[in-house]
Length: 304
Length: 257
Image (tube, rainbow over all chains, first blue to last red; front, top):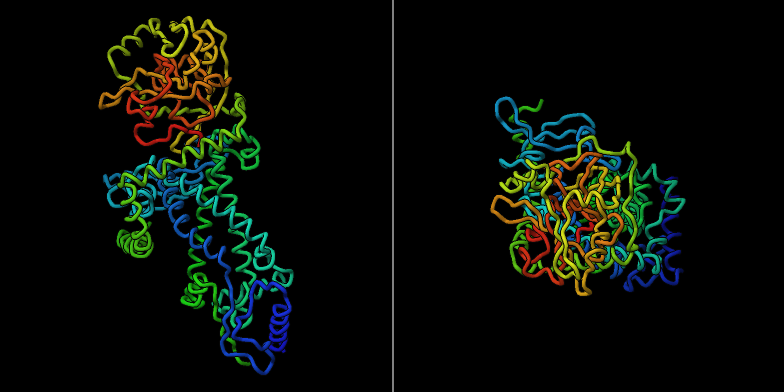
């Protein structure tokens, strides 16, 4: 019974797409016959990602890698985070520092909210050097704050410009409202979607033509909450911007708080990228990558 | 506690996975960094940032001024913390009674002030946040003379674009410290030569007897041990030609972010 209802939903969605004047997921010209109960094609090609989305997506790959790695270079110049406006050393929320043990051995110690962790080899002390993030995680690899800033502030502009163009396109083309915004029925199905994700059961057939609810929330969250937040907190660290727009630091909780939020937003991006790439691999790597390059995505229909 | 062997295994694992992924990007970035042409492209962002920030920031917008209770218990002293020269040591011994501030260059009437004479002039006190390029922030109470007041007395010539601050400190290689800001920014009400921090005369680590406060930009612009302000049309030919000691080492002249 449950299967039948699901299947009927899929068909009705298919009809919605067919009747839509400008569908966001259009059926390939090759499948001219509207799918019916008895004649579902085994595979179907759908135009999934339009050109501006694809360009913006691939530009963000180098932009984000460089911004994250040059950001870690900048963080290394003062590897501690605080709340409020001041950086009182005794009130750090997080610090990553080398510590010389009694034996004379240097250890990397990461302290988070008063809890100490030995992170020798990765954080605090790595490859014989006292540095918070290791050489392989920073741009440039050597300790060089001035150059890290130049990379960061240049690519920040490219990231912001790309973000503005994408956002304008997403709203004008209704990509944002049609494909990314979760519907109320999406949200009602969130429990099931969470369970499906936990057992790595991914949507197939017509379900795979559109983003599932967790996917929508992840994309919308990273695009319209985390990305603007990382830009705002970046600007909030600018003393000139703070003079021009004093309200920014008031809402963020101070300049050091802004720096802490910037760092958390950065690692939200890192977490998003890891989960995103994992799903690209798990749900058909070549098909997914091809669809982000050419736009065309192949859906395999499951016969009941 | 983590056993050394476990830590070693984890280290190898992390290096193998995350490290391999970043290796390609990293070696490419390092090659670009070492090239001559790429950093000069990266530099273009500074002009864009300056133009945009100046466009959105009213010329006299004040940096936030804090209350007494916000003052940092410890105000870190960074960079040079003692000029270390014999001449400077002599000034310390005399409690800076012979210290002179000269204002020269593209001005109608060059002149100089003793420290005592500067302290006679109308002063301004401001509790502001100092944002270091490294990332930390400290709040301090500065008292000093607005630089605009001094410029009104020397009358800058129309072609004076930059105020260069010559300082008493030299680094390990004997390079003298200097810094520069736009003459127009000298008239900002919070731009001053400070002689007190938290109600006491500046100590040596914080730039005694005079240091620049230029509140809307980062800490490395706040030159210490100021002896001379020179008004110039161009920064070419001064130090390394980039407008300051740190600028000559690759930091941006526009330090608004």
